[in-house]
Image (tube, rainbow, N blue to C red; front, side, top):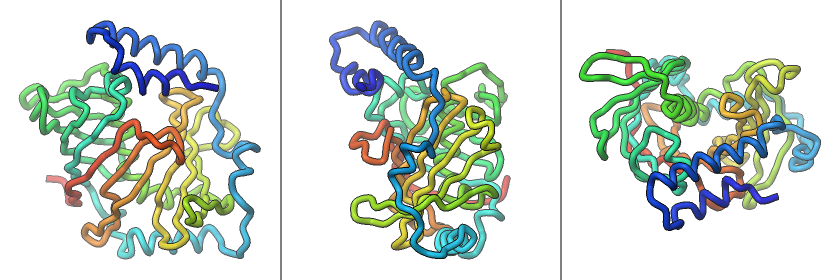
Length: 285
C-alpha cells in the first residue's frame, strides 16, 4: 500500500504549479487521504501490533515503573504544582503541504507559547514572518488578539495545530500520571530496550471515541523517547509518533528540547520538528 499523502508530501513542492493551484492540489490530496483511510479506526494494540513486543520477563508492576519514571522525569513533583509553562522554540516543516493546513506562514516558524498545565489552554505568539508579534490561542475554541481584544474565531487550522502542540509539549510529563495504564511488554529499538506502556483517554469499549497512547520508556535511563498516539478529532484512522530527545533539567523537571512528529517510529522523515530554546515554569501574572 502506498500512502498517497506521504507521496504528495515528498513531491508536491517540486511541481511547477503556482501557489493557488498547489493549494488546490494540497486540499485535494488531504481529501483523497481521508476517503482512503477514514473508514477504519486506528488501533494501537491490535493483534498484529501485539506481535511487535515481547511479554514481560520480570515481576515489575506498572506502579513500580511509574515511580521509577517520575523519579527520573520530575523527582520533586514540581510539574504538578506548576501553573503555566512558557516555551520559546522554532517549528521546522519538511512538509509544506501539511504546513499549509496550519496558521503558520513559514517553513521555519519561531514562536513563544504559553501553556496552562493540566488544562486545555495555549497561546502562541509569532516571532518572525508576516505575522510577527501576532498572538493566537486555543482553549477548546480558537481565538486571536486584535490589538488587546480577544476574539473567538472558527479557525480549524488553529485548533488542529495548537491543540496537538500543547499535547506534544506535555505528554512526556502527563501520560505516566494517567490513572489507566498497563505494561504491554518490551521492545528493542536501535539496540535499546524499551518498556511499552499503554493508556487510553476513556473506555476501552468505545475505542473509536477515545485516543490511545503507547509510551516507549527507555529501560536504560527511564526517559520517555517515543509516544505513539491516535487523534480521533482529526480522523479515526490517524496515528502518529512523537520523538523526544535532547533532555535538559529545567527547575528540577526533565524536559525534551527536541520534539519530532512523524508517521512511525522507523519513519526516516519528520513532518515537522520543534527545536526548543528555553522553557520556564511560572505562576499566572
